[in-house]
Image 1 (cartoon, helix red, strand yellow):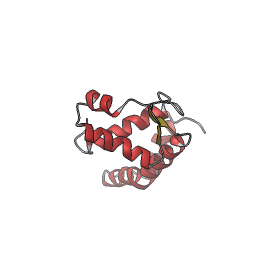
Image 2 (image 1 turned 30 degrees about the horizontal axis):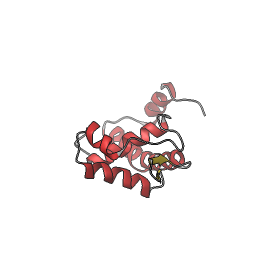
Image 3 (image 1 turned 90 degrees about the vertical axis):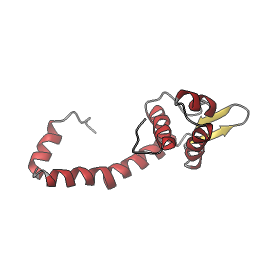
Length: 120
């Protein structure tokens, strides 16, 4: 676990990653909050907070008597949020660091073009 973020947010990101990489598909049941608390050695309240927040965001929903499942909109919601975070925060930090290091636009563009970006 990472000390820079609250544990419940880290657990949320792990579940979101599992949704994005199809470990959990639409309508599939995620691991229970009891299992989450055991796997990550966290207080059950922390696991509940992670799952509740994902539910509030529309990523998970409760299947009565079974557990928490992935909504049809989950991937779309996660990608939208993560792209916003990337463009509005991470990219700005990246550019700021590049400026501090004296890396110009052409150098950055060349590095990006040479990278392993997937083609759209």
